[in-house]
Image (tube, rainbow, N blue to C red):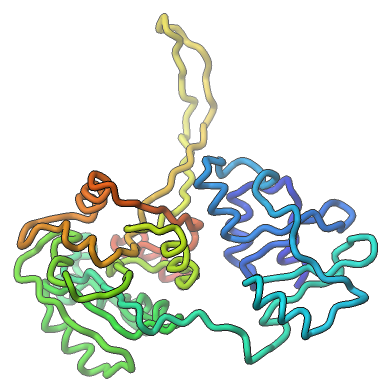
Length: 349
């Protein structure tokens, strides 16, 4: 419905992220009080604003596209609409009348077109780090490996894999250590229609050490994900963001807002009270545990040593490699690696 994707310029970046996360298409139409078109706002526009330093509490006025492609109500034809959507790689085109008032919009899904271009990535590998003990999820993990902890009718690992198979990924590599036989037996019994290759981690090697076993295995950029997170985002757009940005590593970061429940005191240079900030709000981008890596990055990982992803990112930066950040809304990140979040995930999935 039109009201689900129309916004005004006074909404905040955070509000826009939440609206677009629930919208049927990842583009919003920006209008004034009279329904006149002012522009469009895509999830890419929001990311660019955040990466440029715009705070989540600021409005969208500086970040939306003020000169979008539009179609005239009197002249719009399905052929022209498809041509523009395809050629310009657009998610949405507003339809306006002679006064530039928004009367409708065009998307591939609304046109119900079977020829809609697909962003499938059947050749893109996915690595799932599944070797940890999952101590934060005891007592479940005293019996099961963490990836097999159930959420509703299926285990965590299937929820994770499903997001990748939805965009065509079929080549999965799972690093395993703790209770690996149970995990292998599960997939043997499941007999999925995608390939699962197990990478044996003979001893715990941290959050990135076992990736060294995959050196020279891949010819293209690949996903790496923790086995206790579920990220609800457009994985094809994420991959495109990595490639277009010429990044060596891209990490997905969740936009989190923290409110200090007290009045905080600011001091001046003399140590006297300058002002009291009542319940201040702070915005952070939190590392979620989902990444895209270029194959040559794996050579930076030492063999058979405990090595974490933070070490790899720091080493990559020291070597002059380019590290990108792909922001997502905090509601798009579900961390099921601890009990408090697991219980929330039950309600959210």
